[in-house]
Length: 104
Image (cartoon, rainbow, N blue to C red; front, top):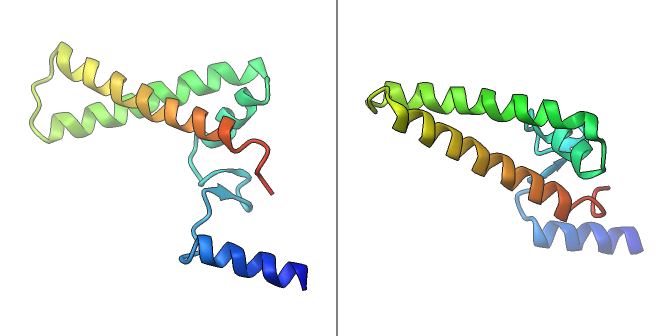
């Protein structure tokens, strides 16, 4: 009966069944940087290079998208790309930290 109530409560708070914490992939919402973010939040210092790698890779993808969208390829493109990637990674790290004890 408790499990039934717990499932019902879960469905009411998340009616579409979307999982931010992916139980199958065991990382944040299936993001490639989710596993390294969770490892860094747990205190594994060896995850820091992976977090930096994901951030730089994401900045490259964002920069390429901005260039295709018509932003001139200059210092602003690099700055905007890096700022966007750092903002996304900061969100992933904060989300991982906030939910580290809530993960089922």
